[in-house]
Amino acid sequence: MASGNNGRSLAVIGGGVIGLSVARRAALDGWAVRVHRTEERGASWVAGGMLAPHSEGWPGEDELLRLGLESLALWHDGFLDRLPETVVTARESLVVAVDRADVADLKRVGEWLEAQGHPITVTTCARDVEPMLAQSIRHGLCAETELAVDNRAVVTALEARCEQLGVQWAAPALQLGDVQADAVVIANGIDAPALWPGLPIRPVKGEVLRLRWRRGCMPVPQRVVRARVHGRQVYLVPRADGVVVGATQYEHGRDTAPSVTGVRELLDDACAVMPALGEYELAEVSAGLRPMTPDGMPIVKRLDERTLVAAGHGRNGFLLAPWTAQRIAAELEVTVGAGLGASR
Image (cartoon, rainbow, N blue to C red; front, top):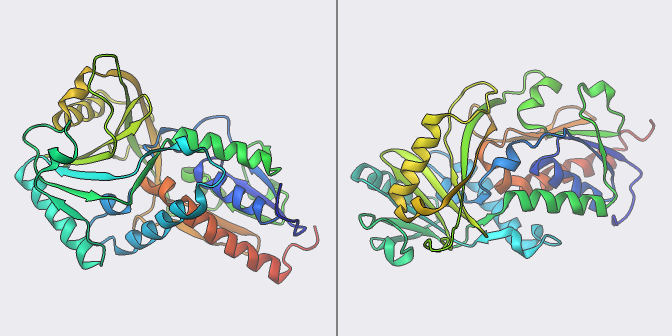
């Protein structure tokens, strides 16, 4: 159960990885927590589950890299406590390039990381690291501290842990005035602007494939493999029974129907990187909506005395979940210290 009771109630709006992480941490800190969520599974259910600040990084995204590395350290140092060990599906990332232009991009990223003080291992023998790679692929970067998690297993485990801590579930909140609590955290991704107009968050569609291993096929890779294929990015994330392939990225409103073009590009790029995946079963095709901000940075802050926001994490929701929970917890301590919401 919770480590105490500070006499305050918290409503978390949103039941994805961000909302659940915030709810778990608040319950551990003694808040009486209620999570308002929909029955539909959102972006957290579609995600690849990569915890990859190095291999996701791009020159110019210095602050996002800093936050990502800080949060990755929290994953390694405690965030996985009370979660099943099986949620971790890989403990290393390999970033590879297919053509000369892709090699140039890879070199640029490596130089940027080194300039930031985060050098990673460079190889010109990528197939020695990952034998399933196509024979023509030689150049790669290894990020040994990165992780991948089974996104659905993490969400399920967080839900179970929240229930153990006494967190209550409630129907979606359509407006803040209907929410009865001393403090409220808006953590419902692309729907956050409906509760607080002006939040610069928009949906960005991403298609994801799930390939299932079949008897007689090459084994599932042991690490995350990210690649640049003629300028497009593709990632291959191990699961116990196969590989998650993702992800396209384009703006198409709230459309979550997978497109033929998007699926074809993902399959083509995945097989260009690992030809043996062509023998796997195409088990699932899905699409989710990433909550993106104009500068790519998450919005995690106080909005007024009662209301906080934790949204806009884009493609880094799982990576930044521990950092977000910690940041919100610090703000909630200020709430308690100031005695806000003492009377209801």
